[in-house]
Length: 219
Image (cartoon, rainbow, N blue to C red; front, side, top):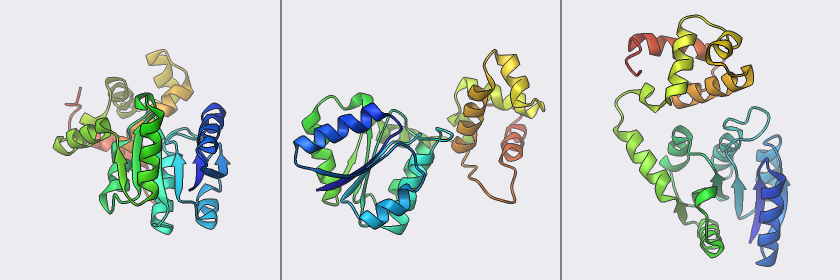
């Protein structure tokens, strides 16, 4: 089996490589960010890409977006998402068309190495390996009536302040957090509200409009 690893943590990358080397699995590439990842994966044509969700430069969804692009361009390559986070919007995109050769595991729930290796082999063979918590979250998402219900309480507070016209710096002052934290919250809000990047659309404005249309009922 040939594998490429993409994770911003050097400890995770090195630990996975050591584990896979010991199992006779060939690690043909290792990436700390998503830059150039898709082109390399499609050219190297490994059996599986193991990828984290949040990678540089913004640590939001670069890894998962790269996984989706690999699935579009090179569908025969298996993709195993290994992350601490569940991004339901992108997970639906990843699994909706064809779950064959797709896995989504949570790092803190991988407690038995043999189970992880079994999941990796299933994905490489064209099967699937989805953590039960991911499945449960997707089912809960499918039952939700309002997109704003996907937001955490803190994200709702940030969106409410955005609707009032505050800048990220002003929001940070109001919530006693730094501006980088506010930027992370804004990125998460846009992702959870399915507001993907489009050249002609201001996603921040669209998020505020959605908030105003519900009169802030989500709080």
